[in-house]
Structures are given as C-alpha cells and as structure tokens.
Image 1: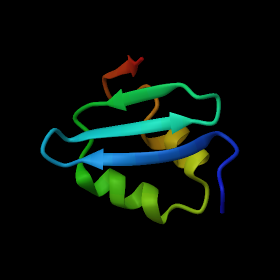
Image 2: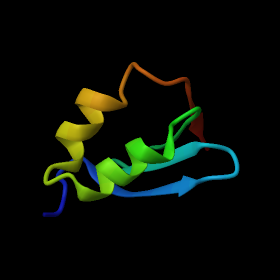
Image 3: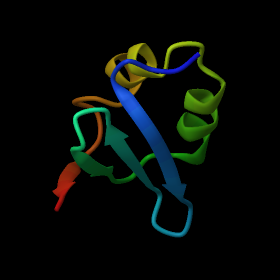
Length: 65
C-alpha cells in the first residue's frame, strides 16, 4: 500500500542507516537502525504507522539537504 507520508526509504547496512524520503520532499537519515527494523518496515502494511511506532523518536537522526 502506498504511504501518504513516506515516498521511499533505503537502508545502508554498512552504516546501519535508514534513509527516509517523505512525501513533503524532506530527507532524513536515521542512524543505528538494526537491519531487523528495516526488514519489518518493508513488510509493514502501513509504512507511516510503522515509522511512527518503531523509528520516530527512537533513533538518532539528521536532516539531509
């Protein structure tokens, strides 16, 4: 199901970083994200709900310009 909040996401296993591109165009890198969380996000029916429940405010992040 397409997300109304998340346009796409990508995982960098060498850095344990999850990059999320939001529909708004904002891009954030979330650090120290285990590959298990990424795999669960890929399988989640609602990517936005999963993000809010399992990633937001739980991992350090930085905005990418």
